[in-house]
Image (cartoon, rainbow, N blue to C red; front, side, top):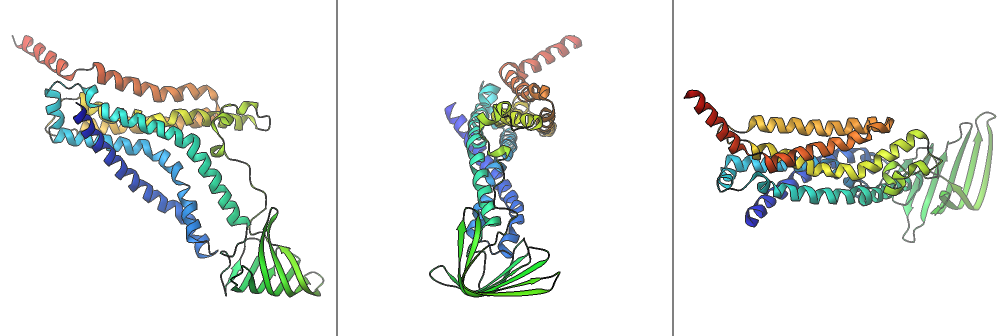
Length: 376
């Protein structure tokens, strides 16, 4: 029996890895398109682009994992039925529950792993992603400004740098500042250096000229300097935004009612997210059982298991759809929170009961006996 379980487990795990990697690759491509502008227009380094997009993967994997496991389990068991492998196992006296052990083990392992991902991996990756996003939007580094090109920032500032020196400084700086509607400032300098400070990004100009024009009065002023420092943030502000729900840890979410700074709507949102971090990962086990239960308890049909597969797909869509709907409802009214647990536990109990106590051969023989009695 161990050999058979290892064989089925290996088949399911291989299918799960292939399906997950394929879906992750497609979704990674779609998610990365919104960062292409940072690479092409702002000169974002490729390694930073790859790091930011990879930090989105834990969140995407957590969503795709139950569906990928469902497809892998259903495909493997359906193929084993088509190849008569499960028919031989059932004829040898192996029960449906014993045949489902591989799916159960993988479902439990992935559920536990997803609990770790949702409570440790996603908060850490979200914090790192927001930190990098803040640095890209609010900090200026040498990688942002290319030699011999005009770089337009979001706040009406245009920067031109002639050359990056080996010591980290730059030469030939030109800055046009139109961040203020009534004033236009132009700065030129022989050399300079980009400086990062807690308040934002600054440029230190050396040996240059500052020219200012008041658009209302057309007043012109000019200042020559040996050293001049100016702050140029490319984002909307230097302060980081507050943590989102995904960045909070489990205890902060569950005890959100104790945080007086949160509104009633935010408290409900936090509490529901805290419960989902424990409940949602178990959909891996639930969907794995749904995928194999119908195929294991049904009678063999030479024409295929199309009807059984269709019913399992409908059940999967119903469970996932109900989870999304009940999550939104529970975010508005916490009275729906028990239904979120019922949506996970009820299919689990039904599948386990059918695998343990439903005997298709017994009912098949009972049906044949009744038909024989009617004929007599």
